[in-house]
Picture 1 (cartoon, rainbow, N blue to C red):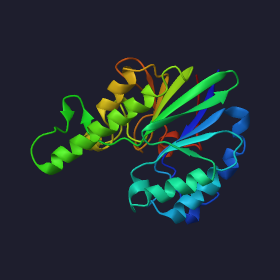
Picture 2 (cartoon, rainbow, N blue to C red; picture 1 turned 90 degrees about the vertical axis):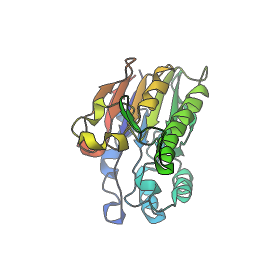
Picture 3 (cartoon, one colour; picture 1 turned 120 degrees about the vertical axis):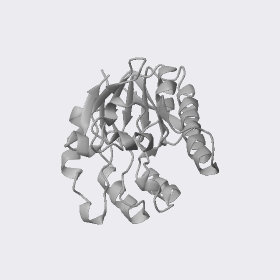
Picture 4 (tube, one colour; picture 1 turned 180 degrees about the horizontal axis):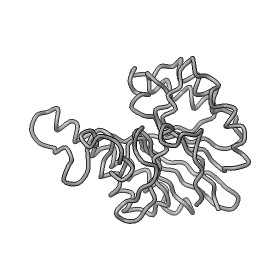
Length: 237
């Protein structure tokens, strides 16, 4: 069994540095890896990223992350990635990593994702350039997730898809339906179902629901901290 701890949307700033650290000290006794599902900062600044790095470094388990929309807000996402990587975290964007857990290989494919909506209620790649750009980017990020999962073919015994945006509407229940197109992307779920994925983890939907499924039956978990109401959740593979 592989024990996967996960949380997203911690939105750390200078006034919250150290807030989560006491709850993270027990991680090695309850989990084999920690996944961070984006929105680690409030406004996407390097200063906030340094707080995140201090919070999640040297925990005794591998830490794998994607960034979220908040982490992009100040156009410092590359610098944020460098700060987190220098602290020993793995930050994914359209790529993957393999973590050894005993005799098993856990593959994590990650991408921030983007909005688009869900079948029958999605943005169309039609009309104004702005609409086509929005829909086009939603398609591009799904393609990047597919490439990341392809890269794990034969390299992992268990596979997780890690995103910030949701692949299913199930875990958005509780959010206003009018904003679903800005919270998730059905193409991510189609990619997940086209690969052998054991678990999909995302954040972003603060008033959503923790548990859902893709059409193909893959477990989906919304680990936004406001949904979990705790430092992290642990899922068994």
